[in-house]
Amino acid sequence: MNGPDHRAELPVETGARDVVHTAIDEKTYPIRLSVEGLVRGSDDALDGVRLGDGLKGKVPYYLTYEVTNTGKKEIPAPYEVFRNLTVTGTDWLPGTQVRLTGGTARASASCEDSAPDTLAPGASYTSCGTYMLTKGVGVMAVTHLVGGGIGPASQVTTWPVEGGFAEAAEDVAAQGDAITVRWDAGKEDGGIVELPATLESVRKGSPDDLAGTVFDGAELHRTPYYVTISYRNPGETDLSAGQADSVRVITEGGQQIGGIPRSFADGLDIDACPSEEGEDVIPPGGTVEECTVYLTADGDEPFVVGFQVAGEEEGLTGWRAKVS
Image (cartoon, helix red, strand yellow):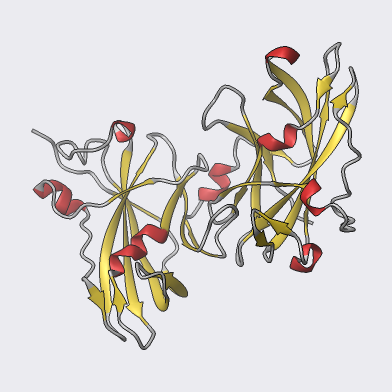
């Protein structure tokens, strides 16, 4: 028989924010979203609840929030607000959402989705969402996302957890420091190699920088950040360039964003991110600088620049971003 669910309340910033909700009918509705509290459940809090294999051994976090319809139209299926809320761990990974609508009595008592079927203008409801995070990590922030797709969401609203950002940056290097990254050069070029790498700069641009540029069939209208990293080849043979494909930007809103190669903006004069010189290889002892474009949402900016560790599905190493 399970013991009591020893819950620990986290010092998350609370309060209401006006955001936009995209409903199940794909229409947008103005809502006021308030984070009321965030609680860590005990390690065995959901014993007896059927969970996917990937969630076994993870810890539940319970987010209580209030939604108010501030518009003039009824919102269908307002429980979908939960889908746009994220709890991000200090390992920079979003928690996995689990919707509890009853289950065992214990699970229901911990956190139950109590959203109504519809939400009339001026009406409110309070509900709770469950997120599963890796055991041993803390929480960086609660985030509401609007939109998304190949790049970031179009709008990000964040409620930080006290000390969460500092904990998430504890094991990363300072911008300008050289670190060793593990990169897969391919079998013909030696497989996984270790390269000294330095984050040279993270520069904020303007949406006007990319005016008229099309990527993945859509024009780029969001704020760009230009990330430049230098890599040195410590080996005795030529090494292919292209390490930028392994770089990710973790934002203050908890998003992990892949970059857009500078080549997609060829022909544009961007001082902070010069056009590539066409270097295909790094000679022994040589160094190459690679600049990549990252698009962020309104209200968000880079927090950490990470390099995907070759051979690890979710592993990142990197630097604390210093935006200029």
